[in-house]
Amino acid sequence: VAHGAHAGTDITGFSLMGHLVEIVKNSGVEAEIVFSSIPLFTGVRELADQEVLPGAVERNRESVDESLLDLGDLGGGERGILFGPETSGGILAFLPPTLADAFVRELREKGVAAASAIGRVTRAHEAAPKSGLASVSRDQAQAHQTLSEGAAADVAEQLIGEEKRRPSRAD
Image 1 (cartoon, helix red, strand yellow):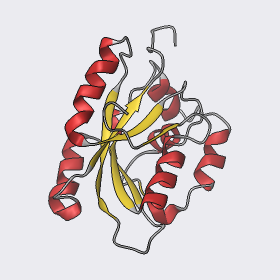
Image 2 (image 1 turned 180 degrees about the vertical axis):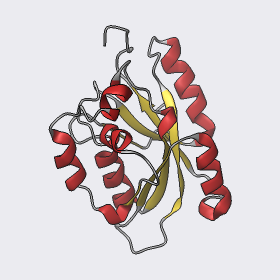
Image 3 (image 1 turned 45 degrees about the vertical axis):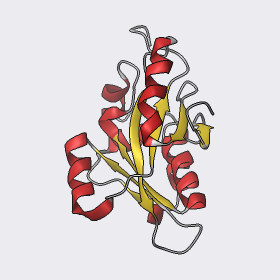
Image 4 (image 1 turned 90 degrees about the horizontal axis):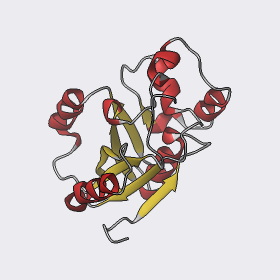
């Protein structure tokens, strides 16, 4: 609350995308995640690329309305990570962009090394209320291209991804 957070959720179980889609749908906004900004434990990407994924990934993916998603050209491993239930208590928090950097800095100073801004709310969704859109770009350059094509001129929020514990080489 000190940093102006007005929405947040523990993404364990229902996945980052499952929770994000519910928030954008119920808030009537569009949000974009930059995949390369998501903190991952060592080895997760390699395992996902080999399709070594938890059983709940498919269930989580099937529970999300695909009309509310734009996963661009992400590969199967990347998509699996987005819908994975094992997040170690990651928090998805929504803060004003002017306060997000200070929040991440404070978390890191308190030992949360994996705290990271992973995206932003780009605009109000133009469709009917109780509708939204969650999109994921592979990297920052792709995200900037999407934004310059008209997705956002006026950024209202930032999304913050944070892990409750520091990833280690043993993980």
